Length: 290
Ligand SMILES: [Zn+2]
Image 1: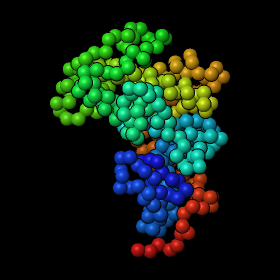
Image 2: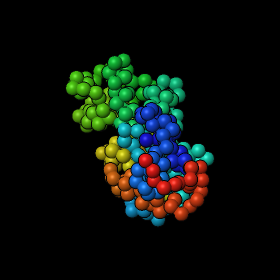
Image 3: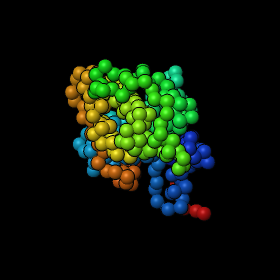
Image 4: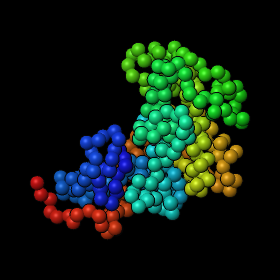
């Protein structure tokens, strides 16, 4: 759930949970528990977990990216979360890759990485492909260096028997699209291939912009795909990112799985407990009252 204001401990403007707009969640937790509480975005907490016990152990500069229902990120710079003055930095899924006829993003934008490569984005594109009979701009994603035969060199297929069958059983999910690719469905294969390429292109930009030691990739979509998801990102970075950071960076799978947010709670508290700046914008904490 994001974005949040980590200093005030409030949820700012969550697109999927409007009732929580400006909710002082950390203060409410303190009031009910009688214990100090801090709030941060799930991906930031996950990054702290991966640094403590997971794939980013020993790293001072790395990116954490989760590809699941949404596509979120966190930037760790010189050993600390990079927050920005509003605490919203690190939303790596909302860079724009298809400004003209890209799919709508959950944030209201168009053609963002999340809309192309996340589970919800894949589901929405699949539903649009079913209703319109086309997949927009497939040709724009042909890479000269992609493995042959390149599925994006084929004409965009107009129908998807696999998706039609799944849609008859309820709403299509991102997993349906991945399953469709495995089953040989051409529309699903095109959508998955584009999702992996969009993610790979984004990785190149992140490597050039942040010079990270690692990009740690979690989330169910990426983890279910495994090397199939990671390999195009490594290949794109090796071929097209700046030479020096490309030679340094390692693109690796996250290690902590679904409980990563719980694991990150301890380093979050440990980091903020004794630092007054983290409470500066919140009202003074009095005794718990009802
Ligand atoms: Zn977006």
